[in-house]
Image (cartoon, rainbow, N blue to C red):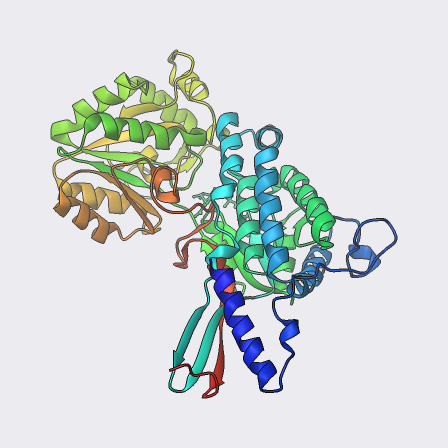
Length: 497
Ligand code: NAD
């Protein structure tokens, strides 16, 4: 494990320095002290002014939330790696233990998505990488030794989406604090109450174990003003935003470095070499997950015309319900507002928020169809310029468009993906098709022959994060995303060759 390697290297350095008359060897690898200062209340107390105490991370004022996070960052620096490990353990264990309660309060507040998947998204926080991810690089040669290590920035200013508020926040705390930082959240206003419940609970537990009270703070009533205040605050060194195009643009205009987990509209291409049953099941699984709220979820399917009927047949056999043209028209009218004359031939379509993340039964009602209970997904055949293809619609519905060949499939996929470079998916066993689509789409996640979640380590190899930095290029975020690289060089003396 990397921390062990780091400890060994430090021990060797400490030994040698001691022999050379430097720091005493006894000082090496001491267990990380938690922040101390007894307040007489029986627990360990946080340092900092009275205004910052007793809040357990929840602040009405953005400046106080940032200031408290900065103090906690300094405490964490002193407490060391052991405290980071403890924080990660606490967040992972509490996300799992509270998954049902927190999943429920998030659904009650946001009214989007599905309870079973809200619960699951919290239970899998344990798959987010922690401190073990930070492996220092060491070099040794004729000129001595060099250690390159991943060191924290300080305070990260984070913005979270309404689509997965507590899961994003929890995963972000794991990544950011594993790297030794503190974090302040400006959550989505429609998912802020549940986020504050989780932040308070995490801080209470972290305080009990480490004496650090505000390692993750939150602005209780977030607004555009609190976002601006957070971004401007001198303690906030970098930003992490997870959301749509508006917040990505706003973060990039702040003048601070922004890690942006932006929007997507993932296309799926299916050809005649794919296993239709497997492709159909994967599309249903991915597109129906949390009622299609995931940014990586299958949003539109381009099927080679020779297999399109087979694919749709398999989707029906596996429980998805096909809409007729008339039902599709009715659903489209309800789910979008079309402004004629704008945005090309069909006018400009904007998604009706009342349908985002709603259950299939709600969509079916708008389409004028009765569906069996337990239906996961609706679908219909559409043209390539249909709003359901081009807009990031986040509903348990997928449009299926026939294409003549791979070239058309790739072209249509590129149009629908809008250059977000987020996620694309292919079902094919033709290596050339896999290669061509992968190169052309050039997305951060490219998933072959599986559902979208395989791209986040759920049924595919890899690790989990709910913040996938797409326009800024950091990819699936992990602790290293929130570090600076620092080089520590010893000239000549410690060469071992
Ligand atoms: P949203 O863009 O409405 O809100 C996201 C966050 O940004 C919220 O906290 C919101 O208050 C804030 N915000 C929005 N506009 C802002 C502005 N101009 N200035 C400052 N703050 C602003 O998104 P949402 O509906 O909550 O989430 C869905 C969107 O997020 C989708 O586009 C989805 O693809 C994307 N998303 C991306 C990822 C990823 O990892 N790339 C993960 C989850 C969601």
